[in-house]
Image (cartoon, rainbow, N blue to C red; front, side, top):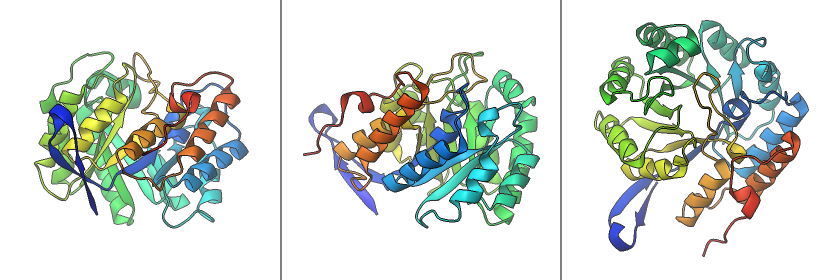
Amino acid sequence: MKTSLRLSGEQSQEFIMHNIIIHEVGMRDGLQMEKQVVPLEKKIEWIERLIESGVDIIQVGSFVRADKVPQMADTDKLFNHLLQQKPAKTILSVLVLNEKGLERALECGVEMICMGVSASETHSRKNTGMSVADATRRIIEMAKLAEASEKRVQVSVQSAFGCGYEGHVPQERVMRIVEQYLEAGLRNISLADTAGHATPEQVEKMFGAILEFGENIEAACHFHNTYGLALANCYAAMKVGVTSFESSVAGLGGCPFTKIAGGNTCTEDLVHMVQRMGLREEIDLHMLIATANDTSQFFGRELPGMLYRVGALEVV
């Protein structure tokens, strides 16, 4: 199903937006920066609320070393619990960084496996200890193994719009990684704005170039709100045909391996925007706001999201 949206005023152009998919990453990207470890029971409570809200995909965690990222130490237990009772329409995803993480994901029966490569040499070495070229070869091999196990696979290009250490990242460098993904038969591709440097014009240009490679590409985006442009960039991505949007409840998050860690696109803020455009009205926005409020109370501080603080406007 496609939805046609007509803009008004100077932007009175018509563009087509495919089904908008909300991929909630708060339990992984949102929590990985938090020093206060969230108990297993509280994570289950939050994830069950997110499932009830009707978001499409929930990233439960990542399979990484517990001594490196203590917040992710219970990812196996979370999957063992959640996969037994979650609705069929909800997809549970996970991030893996290496072959060991992939092995753990397959053992747990994870439905969707996400993995990626940074377009920044500096970020790549800080994040994985590998060069971009080595990381790309390794991730492609892992992705093929996951697909051979009949898993849904998403590959990403991190620092696609800029790097906190290197600054500008040339689009050609991003495209080279994307082309290698496509040559390997990998069609679900995400661009991640790890440092939060993206602008709407850049987003349209980059995703427009990717979608020109073929009609069967599933394009996803992952923006950070470091400089306040996350929602604007999501809108720009929608305009050119991006279908999947990664976001975090209450705007939690940030990459620990970038220079300035800004929060993710806020889920309830994104859903509010989308619903005011007449899309995804079946998602329970009030459930998302309540979850964001509970998250803020748990950490004892105001979080980056806006909507949970000011309330939602009724859609008319």
